[in-house]
Image (cartoon, rainbow over all chains, first blue to last red; front, side, top):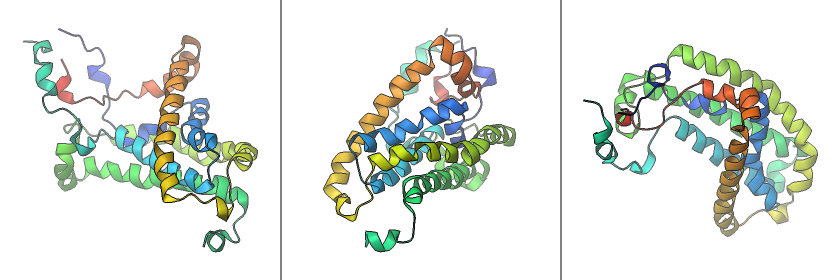
Length: 85
Length: 155
């Protein structure tokens, strides 16, 4: 059996948590949006475009939504043998 | 058209103000709207099949804790960071109409941006998990414990 020590103190996924960071980490994470357009010396509309895409993507991921049904449907069955009892 | 749309707006607003507004609007409207997927029973029923953890929903206390950290940063730190980064933004990004990207340029730039974001995120995150930085910086992020795996995987 695999022990899950954090089972009792986990919270539910919340999209707003996507920028729950220390201030320094918040500033560092600007690079996630700026690096690509900066490397290509893009037009500013590409920064707007990528800001919208990156923000939407992280909000969707942090909200535990499985878009396009990407989760394998038999995933729990694969791990069935690991369940206790 | 570009000139007509941006006429009257200063460069700093186009370079830093618009991305800030885009982020803040999406964070508050989309991020806040996602709470309805959990808190409005009818809506929750409609999207239940698309959630990894259909049985869980964030409490108002969780949301208050998150916003107590994120909102002050969004309101104060982000504008300050944009102001400090303005010389970089001015030197790196074009505002000229003749540099506007074609649809083709948008199409090939998108995977390049995605790759750059992933590589940056990987090394940035790896650095944040070094013992010195984890204890001083990154620990806060992991204080909010969230499982993004299907709940059925719990053993």
